[in-house]
Figure 1: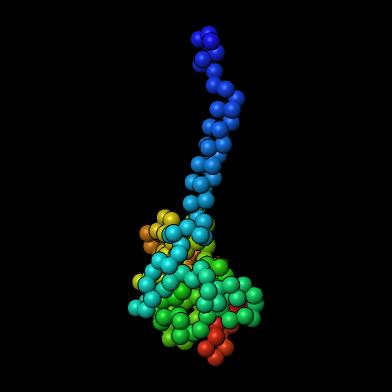
Figure 2: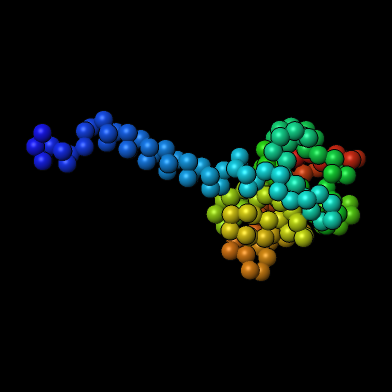
Length: 162
């Protein structure tokens, strides 16, 4: 082989490098903002103004359909809330008996919010925080726009998407 032949990689090697590069980019992109990543599952604590992400079960899938129960009122702590990732909604209870709902997508970089703690709806990506009362971004948050309100209906002890 000549020196010029040795320095040129074979087409098969270039294809493998390109494929590995594309897989790496796809993996990196899917890790940022994916609703299935570890940052959006189960973060937060229940009670004491906290909340928890619900990605499977306890009504999250049913919440996608209007009029189907999303959760029970007793599952939403006063001064806190709960994220229903599969339904795309955060339900909060700022004051006893007052329920609010917002989209679960942060207005800063469109990451899913992960928890409701300390009286705010929290995004793990860049630490945006939103009010549980009106979805407005809190001081120091990179987000400048509020979370969009969602319509819910509270009937008896059931919370449903309207």
